[in-house]
Image: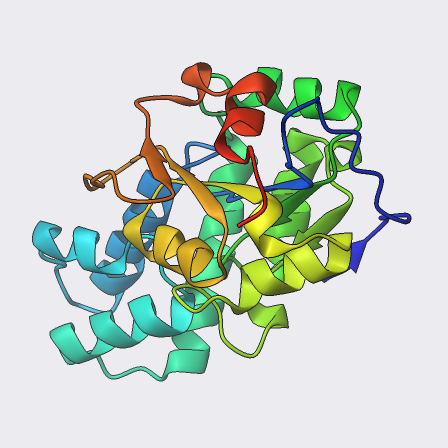
Length: 233
């Protein structure tokens, strides 16, 4: 976990209790969920196995230990989890080195949060080596804190990453707004007690209490996020 956060300054608008915004990375800010699947397909093809496209919905949004473990078991590939993780991370780094498209609305939202001094964290199930590479495109100055999947005892769908992010920013989780694109990430944020904006990337997500579903980040701005946290629960 890396942080440049000073003492928390909420600077919230009147009527809003929002203290911080916590953002997922893959599929939320950068259009990379498909990249991970492409790399998984390529790696398993090199091992002599074909992945069933239906498995994509099983592995999306989760930690590498879960997704890689599932694919090893599903295919019967003769490879260990640690070795496979290295191959997948290496392949993903090569892929994003060629192209790293941002999701529509991502650049505008990050600029708005920065301009208004909103404490913002990047919270991802990806490993630190991947986050640091992606940050070069997103702009590290937009984030007071970043939390990687290999830096917490349990990553998504457990609440640990979001609890760590809120704590690192000095914020109360119930006064944080989270933006996520998968059910796994949504589960992690809700377990932590945060308000969630879901922007589904691969699989549908249904609305629920403390969960708002939108079609794109272009629908999300600071007034929208402040409106989610209008009182302390």
